[in-house]
Image (tube, rainbow, N blue to C red):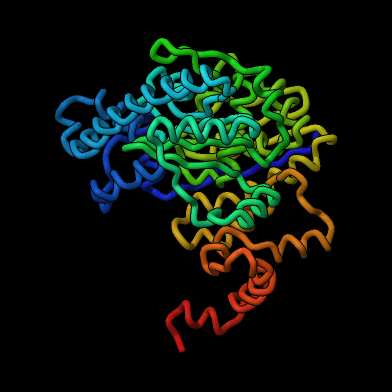
Length: 407
């Protein structure tokens, strides 16, 4: 069997401390040079604040003193989680009474499933998946309940919305009432094809505050979480912690999961995620030993053995890992080029492979172009002219001189 050895990934000191605290490992103190404000900001950015606060509360009172600001923030986040639970239960009951089939994604239901407590996993919004045929009715119900639609500046015209939907963008409508944000989705993901009817046939029902809440079944949910986290370049450590909890559970059948993802042509994302959980410091993910491949830790290295029939799939996963590692180290604008390189490797429905298709995709305006150049719908064709010109300009030395502040 082919074999590959990979050195374990490094992480910035701040992220290592966050993971150590979130996973309940030994390292518990804020390192020198990292202020409490910076530590709190990182905890919130990585969406690990609830887990870290829970670990800190288990420490002796004397050791909790440096973390008082963090604990206070989590107290307010818990109140937000309780309100989200109440609104979600109310929405799902109203949708069911209106004949709208709706599935709850992530949010409080995932937090209860993984951690037994909705406040242990911070969610900025409530994600709800509906059939596209029920979308307008669902929007009307939200507006009747006092929610107001937030118009996305990238999709504010009919032409822009239609073009981005055809291009495979993850589309949703955003509604807000008070401090609660609801996102209505009508497509699960554009990484693989899955009809709403097939998801609904396999759905599970969970109780929330006495109400029935319809959710993805465990396998569909796990595949979605993997594709969602990988699609965002695992830009938040919380997604990896979630997958660590779910994939490392004793009742998870990795072979069945791999076979299902292979049918959807996204098995390379599962391989990437498993290797990542074995390569990053802080995780204690068990060795993976399946009939056609295995992943075992060897000190500071990961040893991967795989059947020859999986050679192409593993090569693709190794390429994604190499492209992803810089993203885990970088912040802000420095991620731009590395992120684009990584995203090009990800599987996407109807991804064009021909040279002509790649050229056409290069000319398609992206969200940043729609923000940068605000053309009306009747002049939409200008995006196809401006985009290649602007890309060439960004590649020129004149653009780089301006960015460096030199003349």
